Amino acid sequence: MADTSPVEVRYFAAAADAAGCTRETLDLPVSATVGDVSAAVAARHGADMARVLKVAAFLLGDELTRDASAPVGPRIDVLPPFAGG
Image 1: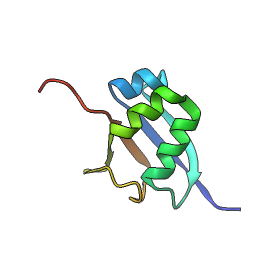
Image 2: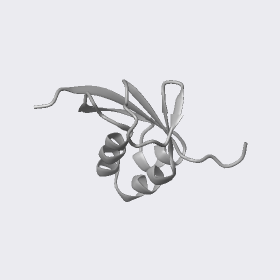
Image 3: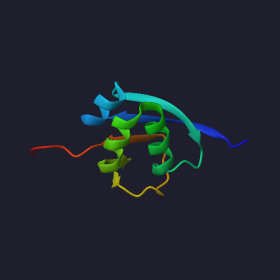
């Protein structure tokens, strides 16, 4: 059985609307990637969230990425495109 670790997922704008919350903690494998988080979040929150995730960027510490293979630490922010400035 793989070791798991809590990952805080913070949602902004349309991602928060789709999730119905601004943050939650998921238990994911220690080796979880952005793709793993996206899959877990889409499975948990459904089609609206899946649509948001397709266009979202992810903030890992100070690094903004769309790379599904990027390793996740203790927190990830889901940032959909923002309108305006």
